[in-house]
Image 1 (tube, rainbow, N blue to C red):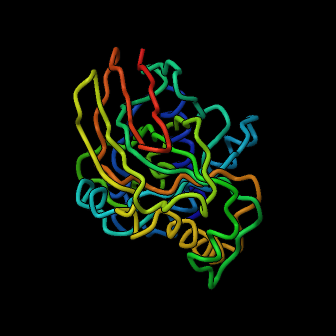
Image 2: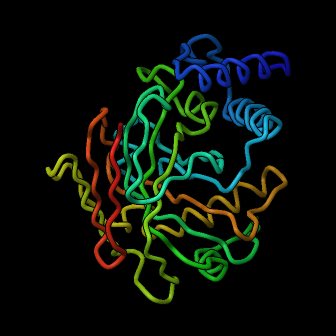
Image 3: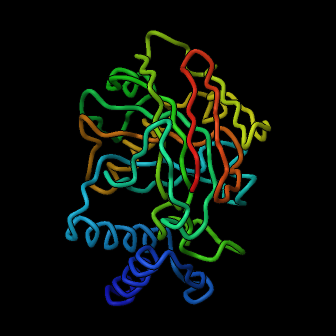
Length: 260
């Protein structure tokens, strides 16, 4: 794709974000588009958001579990950016009107104590760089029509990130076996999805190492203080206005929120 096309698609996505709308699939209009093109579109969109005054607080990793890959038909991880105005806390009310569509995923988030850089970053390197883990829910929000999406569409759309809800319990990686953190997700009192964090690449922090190595390909690194949302270990669950959401993470506590 040429720079003008990339900029035009980034502008479409920015307007869809503002209007809480959905645009036609990029790959339907530009079947030759590559993953590199999609990250370029995301990058232009990100820079527009920062120029408009939003503050980047971290990164999300998506499609890191078999559950999510099977749910989407996409077979490799991706990543996007997270801004300060998309962070909620357990107990918050979340307006449905802020999104084009709403689905929920169960994840762990990590806050980095030190920078992390590829190209040969390992799980042990990631664990050494992590300050603490915190339970999280991710709110998915697609600005591109869902039917027939490919990873190119998803990456262009900031990996379908909408918001995240963070829990209150912080655990250092040496305080808990992160692989066996459970997630029991309920909607309006009924359990809908369950999983354990090992479903994310065998260990949820493996995604952090993957992201550091991926960033190296783009000439960048992960910085101290960033929040890394590590990927879902359940399938996405659709949410509507009025839904009460609760997720039990065992010894890492409970997240509750309500969509209004």
